[in-house]
Length: 109
Length: 114
Image (cartoon, rainbow over all chains, first blue to last red; front, top):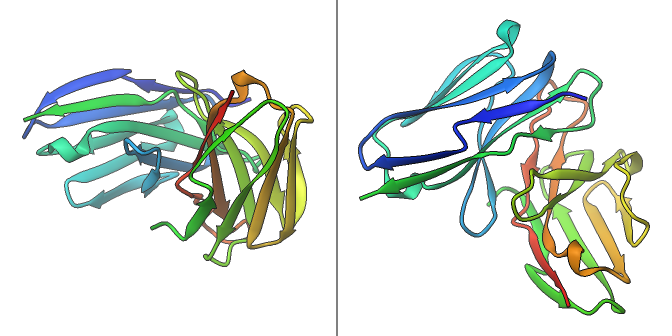
């Protein structure tokens, strides 16, 4: 099945810094989502981005489907950005979102 | 608030108990999913229902029994669980016949098996 790798596994930032999270996947996808999991376990949808670029406030994401990777950019980080960021993909066989292991982000004030 | 609700939010049960987890979606979706998140492991898909039919059973032990009575409701019936089944159980839904297959997740049920 499709493989998903996220990097880095852990990231510590000073408040106000920028960061880039990466997601590599092993096959063509018809769905790619970025999530933020808060300390209570809720998965919050950040982007649905099987291809192209999207922006939402301080966050933006780019997926280059032909090269099988996606990037999540966080600018001017805040302590509330702390948590785990997951990339998840679904291949063209459908029915199954496969999650990466996540990036644990800690933003210090 | 994602439009997907789960109850209970926390559950402690003994290995001989029988309990059920409930999920409800208010998004008009026609596919629903159960995922398991154990400590230090990626989220694992357990079951997929599309148009109320099970289309995926990801080698889940029979002590977990899903039920999807309609497109808005999904249950996970639990019996004779093991301590290693303690985890966060997440429900999700999506629209399988739309241009977007985006999945939305509920807040999860944190299960502890004693």
